[in-house]
Amino acid sequence: MWGGRLRETVLDLGLWGVLVVPVLLRLDPHDGGSWEQVAVGVVGLGAAVAVCRARPLLALSLAVGLSLATSPELFTPAYALALVVFGYLAGRRRRHTRAALALFASIAALGFALVPLSDGNVSQGFTVVLVLALAVVAPWLTGRYVRQYARLVRAGWELAARMEREQAAVADRERLRERSRIAGDMHDSLGHDLALIALRAAALEVDPGLGSGQQAAAGELRVAAADATARLRDIIGVLRTDDEQGPDAAPTIPVGETVEEVVDRARASGMSVEHAVTGRPGVDTPPMADRAAHRLVVESLTNAAKHAPGAQVRVALEHTDDTLTVSVTNGPGTGTSGAVPGGAPKRTQAQTETQAQTQARTHRADGMSRRGRASAAGASGGTGLVGLDERVRLAGGRLTHGVRADGGFAVRAVLPLVPGATAAASTARPAPPASVRERDRARQEVRRGLAQAIWIPLVLVAALGVVMLVFGLWTQSRSFLDRDDYTGLRVGDPLSADAERLPPHPLDGPPASAPPEPPGMDACLYYRAVMTASVPVYRLCLVDGRLAAKAVVG
Image (cartoon, rainbow, N blue to C red; front, side):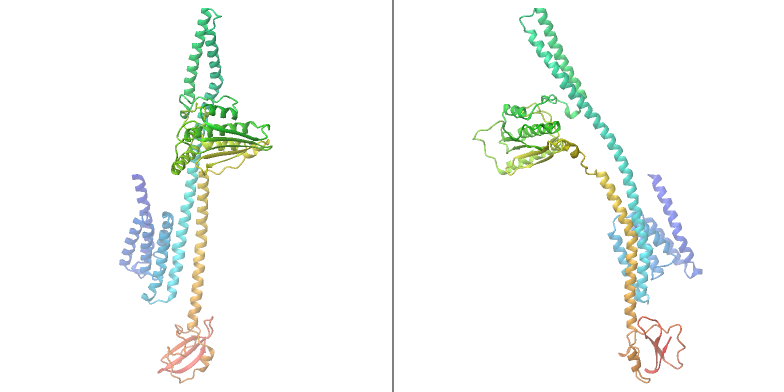
C-alpha cells in the first residue's frame, strides 16, 4: 500500500514539474509577465495536480481558470500543456460524462460572458469555444477511449481467468458425475444379484428337504449376502456425491420400466391417476424418446404427489407416425394423500394459486429432495424442469410447462419418432455465456468511445464553423451600404454615424490598401460596398456633422 502511494506521489511531483516549466518560461518578467503571475501559476498547478486523482474535473477547472485569467481567449502558451494534460486525465479517470459536459458548456458560456468585460468582440467567444474543443474536449475524448480500451483488456484477462476457473469446475463436476454413474452401475448390477442370492439362500434355509448342515450353510450364505449388500451400500455412499447420499438415494426404478408400469405403481400407492393412450401406439419409439417420456412421467407424478396431494392426475400419450406427445396434468391438491371422496374440503382461490406457484417453483428449482424417492409415484431424478428440458432437447423434442387456469400444473413434451431428429436438435446453437456477452459489450463500448473521440471534435469544429460563418454574414450585413443609398448621399448633407440612412455598424477601420484620408476631416466612416468582400469599401468623411467627402477606396 505504501509503495503504491509513494509511486503516485512521485508521478504527481513529476507531472507538476513538467507543467510549471511553460509557466516559468512564458510568464517571466523579461517576457512581459510578473513574479506574482508565476507564483499564482505554480501554486495553482500544484493544487490541480494534488486533487487530480480524486477530483479530475476540479483540476481541469483550475487549469481553465488560470488560463482565462491570463488570456480571455483561453489559449495561452503558459497553460496550453496543462489544459491538454488535465483534459486527458479527466477523461481517463472519470467514468461518467454528464458533469464533464456541463463543465464544458459552462466554460463556453463564460468565454462569451467575458467579451464585454475584456472590451473584446464576439469573435473572442468563438476563439474560446475553438480552443476548448481542440485543447480540452479532444484530449478528454482520447482519455475516455484509453480508459475503455484498458477496461476491454482487463475484461479479457478476467474472462481468461474465469474460463480457467470454469474449466476446473467442469472437471470437478465431471468427476462427481462419474462417481455417481459408478455408484448407480454398482447398485444396479451387484445389488440386484446380491438380493436374488439372499432371497434364494433364505428359501434354501427353510427347505425341509435339506439337512441341518445344508440349511445352516444356506443361512450363512444369506447372512454373507446381507453383509455384502451392507458393504455395497457403504461403498455407494462413498462414491455418490453429497446430494445423492441418504437411505433413499439408491435407484428404485426397475430397468426397462414402461410408462404404464409407472402409472400402475402410482395407483397402487393411492394416487388418482388417469392414463390415456391415443393414436397409433404400435409405432416404434426411439430409445432416447422412450426414456425422455418415462422421465417426464416419473418427475411429474412425483411432484404432483408431493405438492398437490389428492389431486386428480392425467397422463396422456398420443402416438402419430412422426411424434409422441406426452402430457401430465394435475389439478390443485386437496391437502390429503390419495384419492379423496366427494367430501373434500373447499379451497380458496388464494390457496389454489399459492399451491400452483409452489409447484411451479419446485419444478424450476434444482429438483426435489432425493429423500422420499421410494414412493410409489416413482423415483425422481431431482433435476426438475432443467433436467427434463435437457433430456427432451437431446431427444429432439420440445418441452412446455406452466400453471393451468384452475390452479393446477401441466407438463407437455413433443418427441420426434423420425430417425435423425435427435442429432439435428442436439446441434442447436446454445446461447453465449455471460462472460462472452460481457466481452462483446466491452468491445462495443470501446468502439463507441473511439467513434466519439473522432466525430465529436469534428462535429464541434463544424458546428463552430457554421456558427462563425452565420455570425460573420450577419455582421457584414450590419456594415453593408447599398449602392443606391451611397449614390443618394450628397456632400454637405447633415450626417452622423448613427444616422438612419447609414448601416448601424461601420467597419473598424480602412482596409490596408486604402489611400490616406483627406486632411482636415473630423472623422471618416467606412462601409462595405460588397456583402461578401472586404474591398472595395465606401468612405464617408465628416466635418462638423456634415458629409464633406465620399469615395470608393480599396
